[in-house]
Length: 249
Ligand SMILES: [Zn+2]
Ligand SMILES: [Zn+2]
Image 1: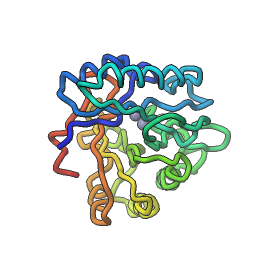
Image 2: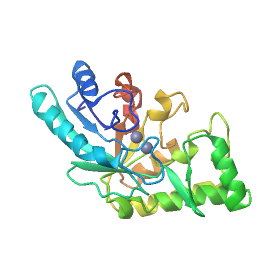
Image 3: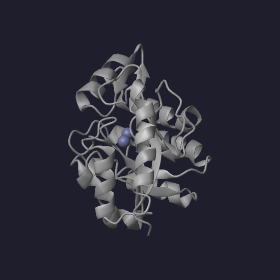
């Protein structure tokens, strides 16, 4: 198997290490290829997205490192394009499409920023019906390719990030299952791969990567493709768990 990882963050967004530190760590790991995918800019959340003015430097740094390390590793430059990003990704090799928020009323509700935020939004916008919220999430995800023109679909069921620590819903509920199946049916038509994303495992939130096993099986049964990615925010998370989850591909 090619030793590669396409979902990697750096200090250009919310990663802890610089791009060059990540490249060096990848070389030490003997990786064949590394792809950077920092968070695209959004107008409403500057806490972890890339600053608009830093985008040219992001591209420049990536290209510089690609030359500098060309004998040792292949470097690709991508972007994790949020559904609600207000910039078009230009000059990158690939785009990872991701939904990190729900646009409800006049606010953007973070779905990976703690269960309290989700609970509050559920009360406010869905009369406490969590399955209406999860249906809204999957409906948004189902449109991520048309919205972002991505080449890879990020953490398909990010909404279940906290499911093992603070279960907000039952993953076996028919309404939950119907919502994700509808989204997968729509996304599978594009023929682009879905991530098996180990980021929530490496950070101790989940014991199984995204997406859940029934989703992986559903994707595979319908001829869909999957790709391992670490969603690394630190050098020691590169290719996290790839050996353990390779059999899922
Ligand atoms: Zn993400
Ligand atoms: Zn990410």
